[in-house]
Image 1 (cartoon, rainbow, N blue to C red):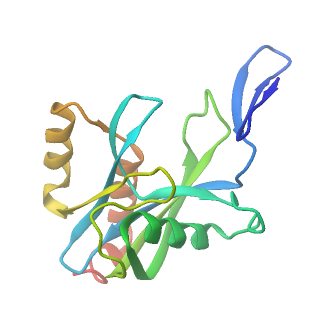
Image 2 (image 1 turned 90 degrees about the vertical axis):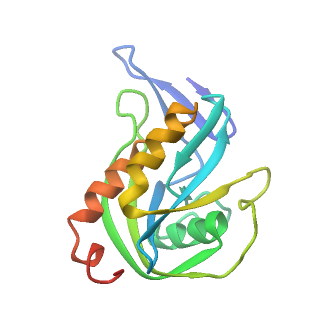
Length: 178
């Protein structure tokens, strides 16, 4: 076993290797839909894959000193504001799932955020060394937009597709944002 600053690299008795986060109790992702039926996507450079990735606004829960027991929805609200400059009036949990069950015990909880209001307006968001660009894409154009970006060399985080699918199952997807 090896412990890094943020990660624990472990091995089960049968030799299976895995990674756990040492400094967080969960991961959150937010599908933000505004009143004009636009999806808020974030784009940022991700060093592990060596390229820009289009993602949901997302982050860790319980990773800040003194906030180890931070509720997941509180972390989602914080991350959404940090990465998009927006707040939302309604928060709906879409579900939880594994991110890479063959490599990590990490799970992500996805949320649908409705009733979005821009609080901060700037060209780049994030904290520390993050450099996050926000894209507002009309809902019917999200898939072609992402395909176009992928053809241009960007990567797409698949959690984005999961959130779009799960949101369609919720009544707020149609009623509260139209």
